[in-house]
Image (cartoon, rainbow, N blue to C red; front, side, top):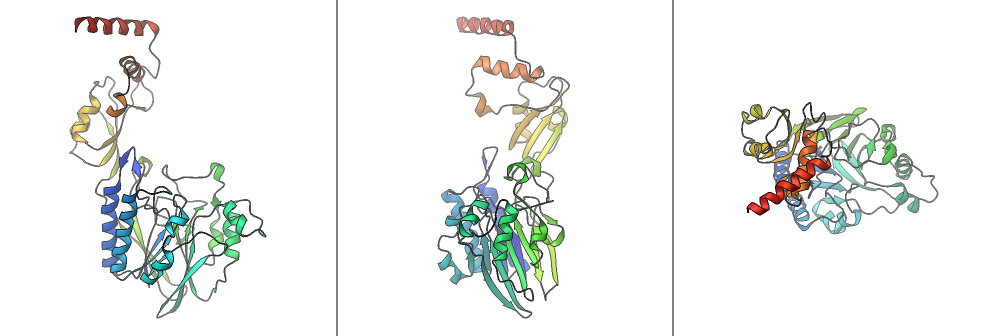
Length: 373
């Protein structure tokens, strides 16, 4: 049986105040095409369907369209909630959806849900473990000693009647110790959400969500699918993909990845202004950093001709000593002239504030301009 594993859709997410909904729609269409061409039997979605627990209508409509297309292709779909999702909203109409082959994790009631599939090699049990916090499980399993996220997952897994002779697949949305993170994920302070990979030894394949970089953890069959799009500039070097999982007889699982190609890539670009203006026109989402010692005041506007989807613009040179993020036009419109002068002065003088003498000169110049007008 062939599964397509994906996670962390984060539908409705914005990046630097830019809506990514159209990009998400395009990548979901690409995933539908991959599901069809790969002849997958089922799709595993390992949490964080939405960016927030109360998703906007457009994000919900997009997910509805995506799942409906999968069902129309005759695919089964398994969905768990992540830390960004509302378990109650994700599971709405879950009982009705089962008749269409769509299985959604419900709010945790003390037991894990499972679905049993059948192929020529016997039964495959799909276990669904949504994102759980210690406080949630304590209420439902009062007899268990639970202080950490690892205690939480171990307590839940102890309750399930797993048959090790069968092939067992787990959908899980947690942080596994040793996985490589990025800036766009929410993590508990002090690493309190860490879970040791050994907890999942009983499962033949663990379809993980929560970490945005596609990767294996400890073994090939314990994997994060990663997010389908880059959701922060820390992910600029990531190669986004979906995982194709072929489950044969017990002990025989093969995993490979199929690359995803976004409409707009996320890139870091750095160099001298003149050199950057010689680069090819690009509509990718970029963070441009220039290294000129005396950058012109309109450098950002100049670069926007070549990079119309520039999300961030910075200057790093010997005077700034470090990355200084230049404000976007929308923010500048809300500032007074003295505030704008102060920002520009700090930019050119290693973040040092202008002196009273500087501000008095500025005040005199502004008054003279008003009198002239």
